[in-house]
Image 1 (cartoon, rainbow, N blue to C red):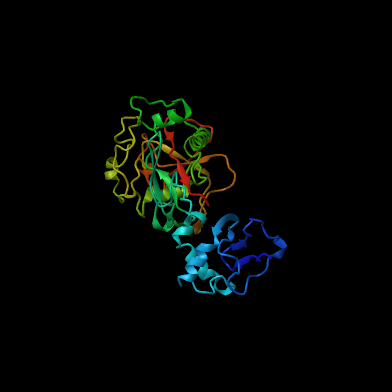
Image 2 (image 1 turned 90 degrees about the horizontal axis):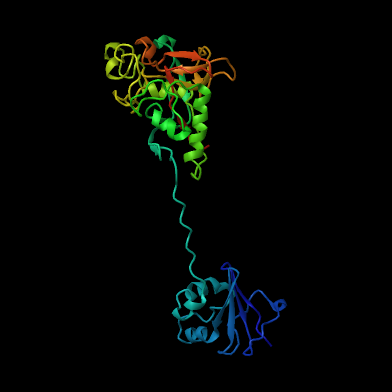
Amino acid sequence: EQDPWCEIRGAGVVLEPLSPKGAAPNPSSRVAGPSGPSAASPETLWHVHIDGRRETLVRRLLEARLAAGELPPSALVWEHGMALWARLETLPELAAFLPPPSVPEPEAEATGPQPGLDWTVPDIGLELVWIKPGSFLFGGSTLDTMRDCMLHDGFWLAKSPITQIQYARVTGRNPARFRGSDQLPIESISWEEALDFCAKLSKKVLTGCTSPHGFRLPTEAQWEYACRAGSQDQFSFGDDDTQLGHHAWYAGNSKRRTHPVGSKRANPWGFHDMNGNVWEWCMDWHADLPDRPLVDWIGPSTGQDRVCRGGAWNSGTEACRSSSRQASNPKHRSPFIGFRVALSRAQ
């Protein structure tokens, strides 16, 4: 008569005794567990089922450990099954029969942009600055005409406007009017062409990233939040427009053309050319800003013109202020208008 199976509670282990001839017991004879150590001979072979795997143990090794007092006499009893399993893992003679220890799969290395960190887009050297959520005074030329605006989600924004070489590497063309340096900002680009660049850039560099981000144009609120960089003044550097020439290319110093991006001082958050050089397309349809607190403002759902921000190489000081805005048809191309890209984190 063969011994019943011995199941060790909670460990996922079943011991299946075999007769010396190797005949397997009838599975229907399985019971909850013996009341004490098995009466099988020391030469009896055991099969152990561990987490669905079936290995062979030699009974006499257990008997030897029992005889030496290294295992309690009740080691095979149901109530002491877990203690037995803990000891089995330490027996060198049984190591070859036990399943290898489970090793957790290493976490896949994160790829692409990570919230809270700046990121440089590979291949085209596009530097993105991470901007954390926050609130600011939005729109208006004075404190009395500004309204509170809250942005609940962090995002990335390009440190500078898209350059001609960056645009050419993504789209294969360069329609800019002004030439002489591949670091000049791209211009003569419609709003629709700027969106097309964003879609192509996403496909080019974000495929295979661990988060499903997508490049786009910044909203008007995001643009001004980055431009102000914590300031409530006319410019991020204060209200003194005589200092604008240190920070921007505008009508007073541009010699009627664009200039390489990043050649003027950055604002406190590290952004260049937020004022002057080229107007920058935003995502929003143009409309009057509501005279009330705003939350994650994205403008109206329809309209005729899109918002441009920041002023250009032909602009006066007033047009280069942080709150300055203008409207332009999304199909319009102008040597005064370029863009920079934004990137939102995955939700």
